[in-house]
Length: 266
Image 1 (cartoon, rainbow, N blue to C red):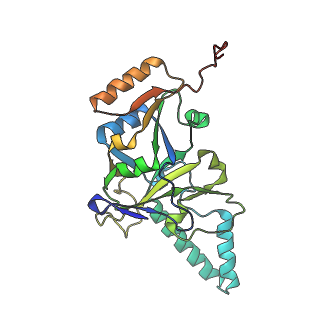
Image 2: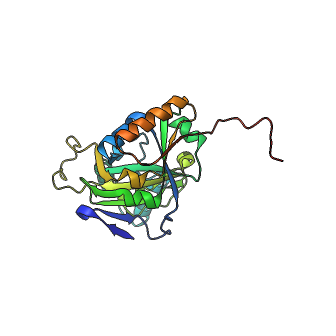
Image 3: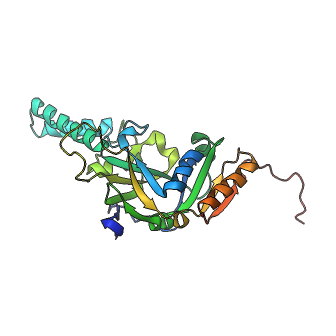
């Protein structure tokens, strides 16, 4: 499915091999308060450059897939010097697109996730709860991107999986199995702006983020405060959201709330 919207901005499922994600797919975004404040004030979703992310394998093939590709070239009779030239050319192209590809990461779980609270700072964090329907309908326009691909991450053992992705875009929807705890759903966009260099491999001057204008009332179903923060934080967040006319439910997580020690359920 390709969904056209303002300024030729379009959404497209990255693959035809798997079903479209359902509209009621529950998605989470764990973030600290400064990032949430930026979302409130700019009303834009920022997608960082793939090459700036913690995982150095973003957009890269795994070692087993690389070995399989080199072996196939050898079996086809390609001499070693040509294999070297071909592979180095592909590595340069991969690096080029890592600097011109932007990613937004979400987590697909039906409920809160204690591990993700820990990872993303449950002593200072918030979580946005939404659905795929709400997320896609919140988007209005992009800046340096005009097409955003979406889909669930496929987790692979890069040391043993010899299947290579078909395109550079597909590679951003494969991650190492060590990250499977994230159960990630992501958005991926390539910078196609003619204002940015396509001949120079130096990323200096390229945007550090792609931004997508976002209707926050459409996006946010619930804003959930970390279970480890004081109750006063909820009132402060409520007041901040009111300043920006936020119309969504705000509550504090009860993840660590102890059960009743006696019961009146008779």
